[in-house]
Length: 142
Length: 179
Image 1 (cartoon, rainbow over the protein chains, first blue to last red):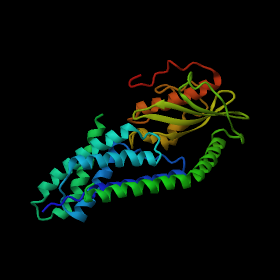
Image 2: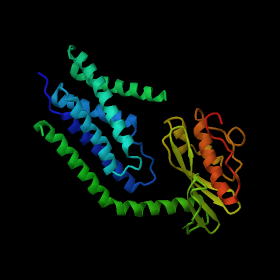
Image 3: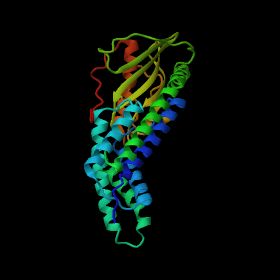
């Protein structure tokens, strides 16, 4: 039976927080290193890492979409603001919400298909990776 | 509040507090390190100069310039141009005679493997040395392969820096796509 634990939001905050903390330390001690921005591609990667971790830790989850999207929006926008990213603002909140919704929906749809296979545990990582590459290619069109 | 929502909300708050605390603790060190790194970089960009003083400039009338530092034998100028994927910020050393003595890309988010090569491609960057505001892709500057827009943006930023020192007008130098 599917559980609804909102674990992905907890993991999203942890993964994003860890990334922002590493960036903060990096910028402090190596101020002229050019770090990647928290753009669409980075948000996709962070969301997918959280989703894969959620799958391995808690199995397939039921979603409470409205609450989870709001929490993801606050996570991306709020933590970026607190970390002092110069470009953080309303755009980060909106893009975070859209990216989380689309990526989670696509990942869940794929995982539904994987449920019928025998080696589903191993297939989750390649699925997430292919989804990441697809998003990267899609963004490259613009 | 639903019991299931408590864990993620608490996690978000804890992570935010850690980030805020980390930022507060490290901000002093960060400012000091930026200052040290900037002085080192400026000394390399303008050989022979040791002290650099920030200079006031008309920021509204010159949007391509971010900051200006005056030294004994020239200027170090932070200039900006719009590349393929956002602003490219350069630090350019310009002698009092209006010649480029050094340059470094400070920040950019260009495509990896293409425009982002401008960060580290020494032969590309070396072409700008000793130019006097006359750098032009296709003429005396070879663009990075597959990154004409980024190359033109770097060229525009370098020319803007030189123009600040010489007083030349660079408003017509197009760097937009196909420009």
